[in-house]
Length: 329
Image (tube, rainbow, N blue to C red):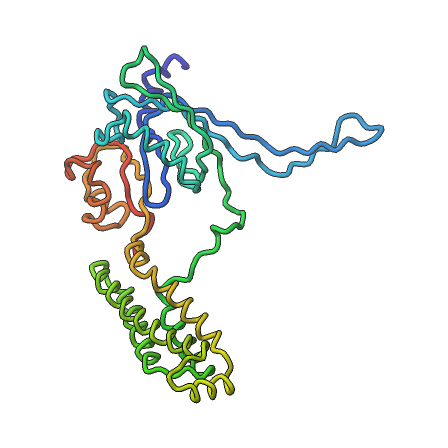
């Protein structure tokens, strides 16, 4: 009954696949491809043995998979999941090339294989006189298992959950090293309020920035006191000498305050970045934004915001690739 399987039927299956896309962090780009190829294999180590034919084979794992995508960019292309704005040529084409300068692992969505973690490896752009306002890219992506530990694996401490702890350590260290300042107690209160604002909804971002400035003023005041003692140029030289003779140079206090300044400086950007990252969501048959929201259990308003350029009518969403959040708090 092979005659019953028509080429039209195969096309219908392919048309239901999502478009190709690449996501790095909170940014992504969708692009049409004409064809793709996938290569992979196993890492085989051959051990030849004396007086034996052949070799003993050891499988040391799989080679990283490599995808080669042939993408085409022309403003006459109409494909579900590809928005008309920005223009495919040259805007989206140039945006794809920009993603190769990120040097970060991202989510590659290939129509047949789905989403994989991969690194943008190489690209080759070409234009032809026979194709007006058309560009082509040959893109190569390599699978990344992300098991390696490098500098990117070490992240700074989060402001949320660490500001008060750091303030308490600083307070204790300053007392141990003889640095007395009324701003130490203020620093504890500022950091407690800062952590409270970090837990609040997103509209409190401006209040976080204001609280950071207050905390930084207290930190710099204590830091100036500690540095004055360390340099021995206090107005009361006798008092400074007594502190140095009893406690020594307050090196730990200075280092702890500098660390606090570095960590809390990221409070505003951390507050803005608390939203979970968006991921592709494939719609296979017409639906509404309420249907998507019910499926992923996420607020309608949030889904409309991240799909602003993709959804024209929330009550008539055509098949294609949209965006939802990876998780919802």
